[in-house]
Length: 166
Image 1 (cartoon, rainbow, N blue to C red):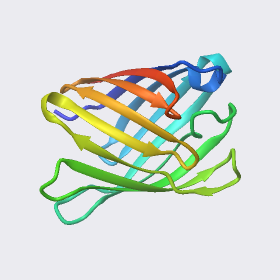
Image 2 (tube, rainbow, N blue to C red):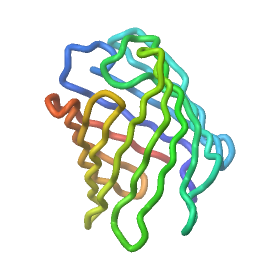
Image 3 (cartoon, rainbow, N blue to C red):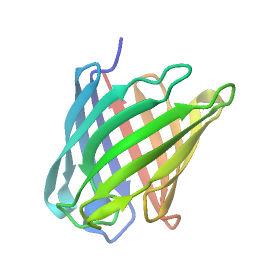
């Protein structure tokens, strides 16, 4: 059974109101479209989340998706980002990579975030990423319907994220 609803909660040790607490809820409306809401209570902000899968990843082709969410960690409340992402698992390796063309309302310009995931045994993975301005590192532990992530925001602040789906 494919997950239809997903929920997550993130906490970050930072003085930036928008980044401190973040809750999300998303629903898969059709197999290729997810819509949802992001709530950043410390910044009194509620915003849209959308992910539209244009192409699903296949053996020889990458995933391609469009979307929108709040702008990167550390930007002001109300700043939205709009993105086009390409993602692909590398053949015969426990690694996937992604690159994004992102329009940032905070910068009023485009940037190019990118990242990778190294899949380890027992449900762990390590994900270094660059958000178009700064670097982050996540260590995830994932089970079939839930996950926990320890986040190194800007490689200097710690955070924790928990998520579940059904």
